[in-house]
Image 1 (tube, rainbow, N blue to C red):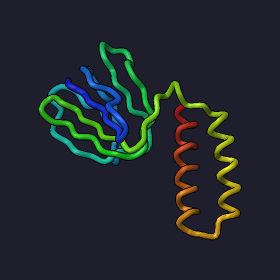
Image 2 (cartoon, rainbow, N blue to C red):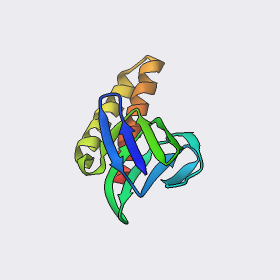
Image 3 (cartoon, rainbow, N blue to C red):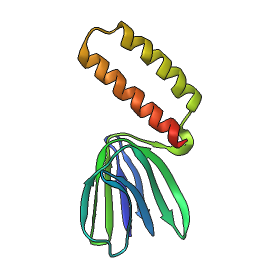
Image 4 (spheres, rainbow, N blue to C red):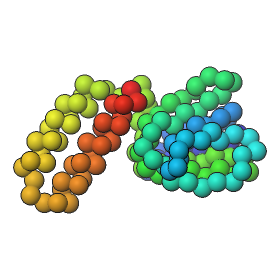
Length: 128
C-alpha cells in the first residue's frame, strides 16, 4: 500500500507498507491493502509503519488526520517524533519547568497551552 506521512515542516515517510497502525480518534486500526475508505482524526499515540511483518518506522504523533482509500494511506500530522528520538529525561526536566510556569501564570490561555505541552510530553514518555 502506498503510504505518505506529512508534517507541516516536511514529508516524513513516502513508500510502501503492508500495514500502517494508526492511532485513530476512536482507537487504533491497521490500514492495509483493500481497506475500506476512511477518514479519521488522530489522537496522541504510536504510529507504526510495518513492511514484511517487521516494524519499519515507529513514531509518536499528536494531532492530525488519516485518509485511507484506493490502497493509499495519507497521514497529515500536527506533531511527530521518531520513537527512538524521545528523551524521557529531557521531557521530565521540561515538564518540571512547565509546572513552575503554570503557578506563575495568571492568564488562562497560557495555562491551557502549558498544560497541553505537558500532556504531549507525558504521552511521549509513556510510549518511549
